Structure formats: structure tokens, C-alpha cells
Image 1 (cartoon, rainbow, N blue to C red):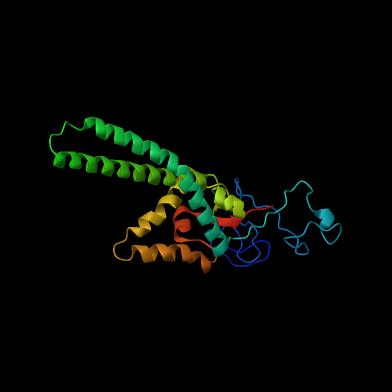
Image 2: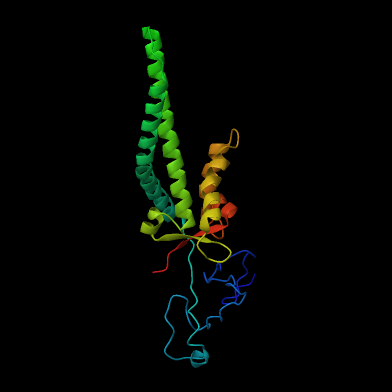
Length: 228
């Protein structure tokens, strides 16, 4: 696919030009916006006069230019989102652990020996720990799905990044959000090399033309710098 604005060659599924960062995917209806004049720089407002200025459609919305997010801003956003997700997940995790503990304690029978009492205590503690981590893990995963579906969690918004659908630049939605959240975990399940593949997944955006990780490619998303 050739960019209609600068002529650079891009992948067929690219939403933004890798050269000038212009949005090159067609909007709904299949009609592309009119190309920005060559004399108008992407990051500058329209010139007050110049070749073709008075020929342009004044009602045509300005073309948006998007910049793919680099590794370090994404890494900072990842840490912040992890912190927010962990803080939020503590509440449902404690609630679930308490419910499980009460249920297990109520189901235990009367004991007559110290050995039986110790067994019941160990079962109760184990159940509470399992309940806590199940509630914590599910809550963190739910935060990731919702955040991805809405275009990025609080961490990405603080850093100034957004998650968009690669094919059209729209908000991903819950289908893509679910894939983007679960893909890193599935990559980590590969026997023997799962941890190495997870690391490579996150580092892939360093040299990818659209700064995508593997879970971005699986979900069909890109991470871009938010327009101000």
C-alpha cells in the first residue's frame, strides 16, 4: 500500500504511514480523505496562503498524523498499569479469600486430635491463599481487558499513549481487548522457552515497523502517542 500523502510503501494492513505517520486506512464507506498538500507539513497548521490553499474543501476534517509509541514510554505505561491493576485487584481478592475461608471453616468437622486440628488449619490457610490469588489474577486480567477495549488503561493515559485498532485507528473493543490481554500469557505457556518468548514479545516493538509487539499483532492493535 502506497501512502497517498508522501508516497512511501507500507504493509497492506498498515493503519498509519511508517514514513509520515499519516492515517492511510480508509474510513467507513471506503473513501479516503483528500491528500494533504505537499507544501503543508504534517505538524503545522494550514498556511494562510499558498498553492492550492483556496482550492481545498474548508469542511474537510484535517488529516490526523499518528506516531507509534516507542519501547520506553510503553514500558513506563506498563509499570503504571501494573500498579493500578494490583491496587484495584486487592479488594476483590481479599473478599474472595474471606468468602472461601468462611466456607471451608464452616464445612470442617469436629476434630479430636491435634493432628486433625493441624490438618484443618493447613487446609483453611491453603484455601484462603488460593482464593486470594484467584481473585487477584482474575481482577488484574479483567482490568487489562477493559483497559485495552477502551483504548488503554490509566497508565497509558498518564504517559500519553492510546491503544487503537491497526486496520482503522478505532478503539479496539472487547474482542481485541481480550486477545491483547490473554496473548502474553499464552505465549508464556510454551514449554521450556515460554519466559524467553514473553521477553521477546515485549521487545519486538523496538524494531517492528509499526512498533507492535506479538500480542499487538495477534489482537490487531497498535500503540500510538495520543493527539493533544
